[in-house]
Structures are given as structure tokens and as C-alpha cells.
Length: 407
Image 1 (tube, rainbow, N blue to C red):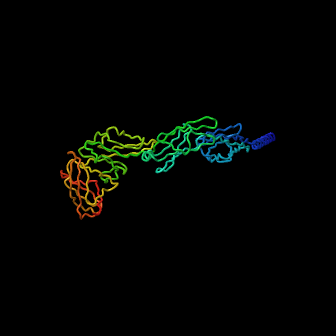
Image 2: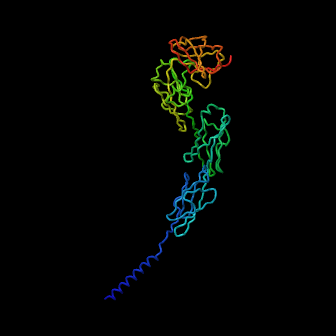
Image 3: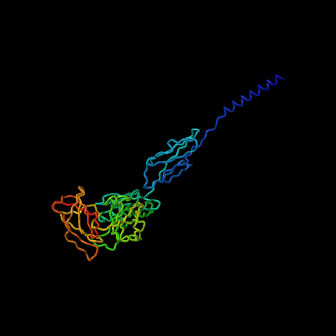
């Protein structure tokens, strides 16, 4: 009985060892998959022919030839280049996919170059020398040129020309280098070598979103003293809290009602839109923020602040230049009462002097008045701030400045 058990044990052990040996010797099959599954270039049409192992790239006329490509291959396979790499479509290109089992498949890249427009540029003559490249949208058949229509309006005599390049075999209705009217742009028509034609609509859009002049309606506006805006940078800090230097300030008399006012004018860039609508009444007891949007969609915000004062002087608040004088000077002003005295303060030394008032005229018995004055002969040359005293007794430091020269 013991011999039988030992014999059975030996047979079982032999079978177990034989089974283990057989399992370890069975080879694992390796994948033979070696397809190129994805071949993508941003904004470029591509396709893969798995039968003929060919990649087709349809290259628009506006595209360059060196582009970034994204490639995906079969699982466990390898590519002869990185998954993300640059491809030069100006030279023959091939890709080799190697399967896990070592077999390979080669793909050839075929480039089809579409006929059409390669570039479209507007050149501006003197004094606006420059070049603006148009954005060509092949799908929607448009060419968009973004330029400064404000500058073109200021210099209408500046010659504009259209310079363009097409692929070989194309004929066009325009001649490259000839004058081109951007205010009334002509469609660009191309005829391909096979006789078909395409019409590109040329869109000339302004990138400007500025404000030139804002004027305020009042009961006392005259030809000489108009209520225009000035940059906040022209005024002292006490008036400009919460404003940027490019924001605007308008000053009016303290007796004016500014709670429900439609602006007299609001001059913005050509074809720009303004919000809120300047033709609608606003409460100017608070700052109003206007958003100016160019044709191209660029936005700019300008805040307008209206300040009430006791006196307004023609040219006051415009610090682009001082009013020059050799001793005698004059200005027109609007106030609820007349000026009885004029003083001047030296900007550097803060010394104060009193001017001699000459002619003082009221126009048509209105608040619009003219006054002339002169400085004492002993006054030193320099820059002076004007201070006035009104009949009411108010003493006001104005924003009117004079640069006094030698006599």
C-alpha cells in the first residue's frame, strides 16, 4: 500500500512539473497593429487613406508650409517622430509606424495646394506711411482691413494702394499696387485656372475708439465761451478724485440745472458706438461713464464729470499752452456777477500781485463779458495763476494761466 501511494505521488509531481514547464514556454502574441489613426493640423483639412497608406493635406493659399502636426497611432505602436512635431510641407514627407511585433507601415504625405489669395495689404502714402495686412477668411470670402479711419479723415489726400499676392494661374479684377479707396472698398474678384471665380468682400473697419470733443448745453453759451470738456489731467487733484488722467471734466455755472441734460455734442471716432447713448438725457449730478466701441470691437471707457463753478473764462482749463502776455492781457468770461478785481499768483514763488483793470464790457446785457487788464511794470517774467474777486465778494482762484514775458 505504501509503494502505491509513493508511486502516485511521483506521478502527480511529474505531471505538475510538466504542466508548469509547458505554461512558461507558450509565447505571448505581440500586436501587429500599426495604423496612423489621427493626423491633425490646426485649421487645415487633412485625411488618411488606410488602403493606400496616404495622408492628404489640403493647404489653403494663405497658409505657411511649416506647421505643427498632432499624430496618434495604434496602441503599442511607435512612430518615427514625436506625436507633436513640425512638418515642412514644401518637401516630401513620410511617416513610419512600427507595430509591437516589429512590422512597419509607411505613410506618404500628399499636399494639395489650393488656388487663391495669399495676402492682401493696404499701403498708406505720406503723411500716413504704413502697411496694414488684411485678414483673409477663405470660408466666408471676406478680407478684413483694420486701420485708423480717424487718421484717414484727417489726411484725406493720403494715397492708399492695395498690394496683394495670389497663387500662380489666378487673374483678378484689381491690379496690385494701384490706388484703392478704403472709404468705398471694391470687392476683390479672383478667377482660378479652371475658370471658376470667387468674390471676396473687402471690409475696412476702424480700430479707433477715442473721444475728441464733448460739449454741454447751457442757457448762456456764446461764440467765445463754450462749455467744452477738458482732460482731468488739466485740473488739480481736489477735482479729480476717482478719475483717470484721460477722463473728462466739464465746468458750468452753479446756477445751471444738470439733472436731466442731453449733451450738445459728443464727437467720437468714425463709426464707433457709444453707450449710454449721448443723445439721451443724463443726470450729471453724478459721473457718467461712456463706453466707446470701435468697429473692430475695441472698447474704451471715458468718465465725464460736470462741475459747477462761479465763473468760467474762455480758454480756461486748457493747459496745453499758457496765454502769453507782455504785460497787458484780456479774456472773456461768464459769471453770475461782475469781476471787481484781478490778482495774479506766481506758480513758483507763490507771490501775489494785483492787476490793473482796463476795459470791462458786458455783451448784450448778458452774463458774457470782456475784461482787459495789465500787470505792474515791476512784475517779474514767469508763469502766473489768475485769481478774481466778484461783486458778491467771492474770491476765486481760476484755472486761467498766463506766461508773462519781458516788457
